[in-house]
Amino acid sequence: MTQSVRAAVRQALPAIAEAAADVDRSGAVDPAVIAGLHDAGFFAMLRPKAFGGLEADPAEYLAVTRELSGACTSTGWLAGWLGVNTWHLSLFDVQAQRDVWGPDPRTLLCESYAPTGRLERVGDAFRLSGRWSRCTGIHHASWLMAAAVLVGDDGAAQDFLVALVPSDDYVVESSWNSVGLRGIGAHDVVVSGAVVPRYRTFGWVSGDQLGTLPPLYRLPQPTMYTHTGTVPLLGAAQNIRSALRPQARSAVDPVAIALGDLELSVRQIERNLDELMQCVRAGVTPGNDRVLRSRRDQVLAAERAVAAIRTFMSHSDGRDAEDALVERVWRDVQTAQTHVASNVEQVLALVGRYSFGMEVDDILW
Image (cartoon, rainbow, N blue to C red; front, side, top):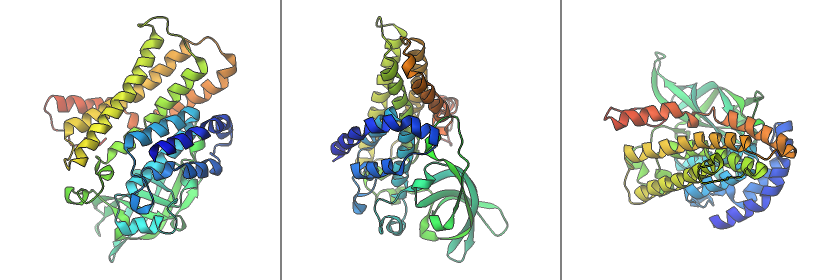
């Protein structure tokens, strides 16, 4: 089934690539493109089988996202994040999943994991208020998953939760006017006192809870998010390579090295995800060494992609007709690289501390 999804998406890539300049100018991806990705099965890849999904291998999902990004970085980034939010909802209480997918399995969600909201207990429910920035794809979504701090009666923070609210409970304020990724619609969202049932909140999943989920949803929780923030950069690098066609004159030529780095990144990501999936399929929680290696290789893949793009640009044969494409993709890459998933120094500092036997309590990010 996932091969048929990939084939269907590939048929749409020429039209997506042709529309990329319009996406950049208009600041939006056409809803018809999102509908086409639905029809292709892309957004079903990470959805549970119980709601008509495929529960696809994560590497396959990321490979399709990478190809989408190779046609249009904004479209790939937008689709990738809308799809990965489906994965997160699959960790919520089944009743919350029914609320979203029961009426329509094609329903999409937006998420902001920055804890800029406030939750207060109201009987057996919560009251949510706050503002969340950079909510990618909010206009294509019908629900929001918003991170918030749970506060007690004394105002002190007690916990960190993610609350699920329908579109009737939030207001979108247009704010996304970035240099790159102009089509992702990462606008601000405001919630003012929405009542959230307890089952529509999500905290940290315990080992006992994870054991009841299919293997895909037992991956370390940041894995899908951090990789979704990297593969669009790899796709963008392939786009620049195809446009400029830089030539490698020897095995040690900068272009050859850059191409090798891109291939290395893809293979490392595939290997790491495969090993993580082998662990969870066997009922084993991946250890810190495996999770950190995956995070290290993922963040270095983002850095290699940007370096490869620079190399391709400096060793091109001067295709003036592609100047507009290169300029647009370069802006997209600069914006994408600011995401927390691409914070190389932070991740390598964690890897270094762990390598020297120091405690790593912020291994997630």
